[in-house]
Amino acid sequence: MLNVTRSADLWQRATSVLAGGVDSPVRAGKPVGGPIMVREASGAYVVDADGRRLLDYLMAYGPLLLGHAHPALTRGLDAVAARGTLHGCTHEGEVWLAERLRGHMPSLERVRFANSGTEAVMSAIRVARGFTGREAVLRFAGNYHGHFDQALLDAGASAGAAGAGPSGIPTGVARDTIVVRYNDLDAVDAVLHLHGKRLAAIVLEPVVANMGLVHPLPGFLAGLRERASRAGALLIFDEVITGLRLGLGGAQGRYGVAPDLTALGKVLGGGYPLAAFGGRAEVMRVLAPEGTVFQGGTLSGNPFCVEMAHRLLDVLEGDAELLPRVRALAERLAQGLRQMLDAFDLRYPVVHDESIVDFMFRAADRPHRDYGEAKQANAAAYAAFYREMLAEGVLLAPSQNEVMFLSAAHAEEDVQLTLRAARLALARMRERGEV
Ligand SMILES: Cc1ncc(COP(=O)(O)O)c(C=O)c1O
Image 1 (cartoon, rainbow, N blue to C red):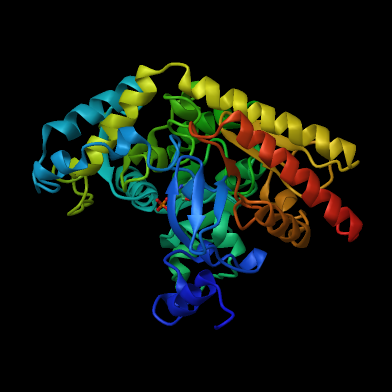
Image 2 (cartoon, rainbow, N blue to C red):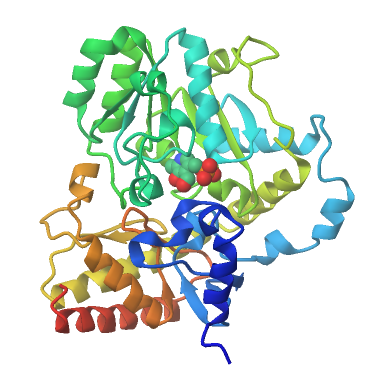
């Protein structure tokens, strides 16, 4: 018998037919030494191609707030499909979904649906250019907005961790993309001083979940709001991760700062491909057919994914305790990790927000605030931790840029399992002198 596992065999096949073996670079697991091949998933667990059940904190990088294969999103799909999965015309579900979203996020005066977060942010930026008649965009290092040209330079998530560089991005695009340090209003002021008149938009994750978890410092979001308005540029919040996950009103609801445009994705579709962008009616009016900025898509707003978003909203609106329950569980995980790191005398700040938990292998008195600080984290130690956790049956994200996502399917015993696994992992790493 050949001494290869089903996962290894499948990876071999994958690399000979899929580019790099994957459809998204992060999945190759380069920073941690290899990929996970998944056979199926349910609740808080995935089963790999060798039949190993793994407690999942990757949660598909964020969409699965309800966990894998939640009945609300898998029940009666035949009946949904039987009404037609694609109409190529506007339908009632789309209209109602936009109304529901606006009910939670009043800044979404007009909405347009798309299929991925990438499309949503890319389109919002084009709208901003069309509205302002300007071309430059100000972004923040370590934020991730998808894989379109303007989003990639000095971006977080796998764009920063998978070994990719600026290849394929036109120099003209790079010239019009100004990237500064997150949480640094002085850096923003310096850019506004030099480029304010050609700035179409300031775009950011209001809470960043792509360089670990980073919160805006007090006054940062309001400061950007005020500066964007003063410069005649639009403020775009990329709430692809935070929208619905930090509460139905997203980060903007929590911080009380209304952007001109917002991008949504991930949780919105509950695991089905759905995204949206929207904002001030006056701004969205530049989109064709009312205006001259073109944006559209064959699959956009399709009734199947729109129905899934309604079902997701039904669950979230129908159970006001769901988000607080996941928050409390995540808080227990964060607190348990804090105590454990303390016991190992490791000063790694643990950051928690709603269903997101994060720590980096970076000793400090406070959590990191920007990408420069995030990059100080010890990548080799994280890779060792990832592998030890995997050996204990816990699947983490394959890079420190990513965070731990909990879901409604995670339970107290999962948190306990995770803490036991982390204790063993750190103990073994300590023995080997890795931490
Ligand atoms: C904040 C943020 N914006 C945009 C995107 C891009 O979304 P998608 O991968 O659906 O294109 C991501 C993906 O991770 C993201 O985290």
